[in-house]
Image 1 (tube, one colour):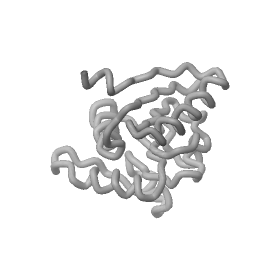
Image 2: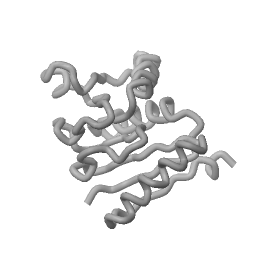
Image 3: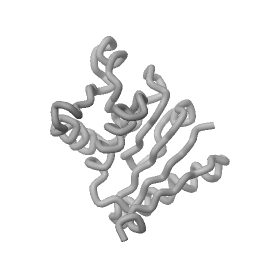
Length: 147
């Protein structure tokens, strides 16, 4: 069963996702798919390019040429696309407002929620979706971490 981490009360989802992805790839050796709306994926893409040359993480879009997708440790995938249709199945990072299509085929899902009221409300519905289906959720409240 997919492990689910719910990271919430974050002031900057894109930069947090960038740090999370860098750690997952560099430290843990994971292959990661990041799903979200186009503007959020643009922000993550920009943040990944701003890493120092020593910390750079190769990445591409899910609709890139197949040989690039196969070799990239990080794939940025549009929300609504079947991320599970990609070769990567280790870690899925959700930055979007909906439950990612095919999330149950990944070993781990990290669902990221900002500290904005609307995003928190939408995040609660995703939490309920996972919980109603019997998934164990590991919460990480960053408002408490900051205190």
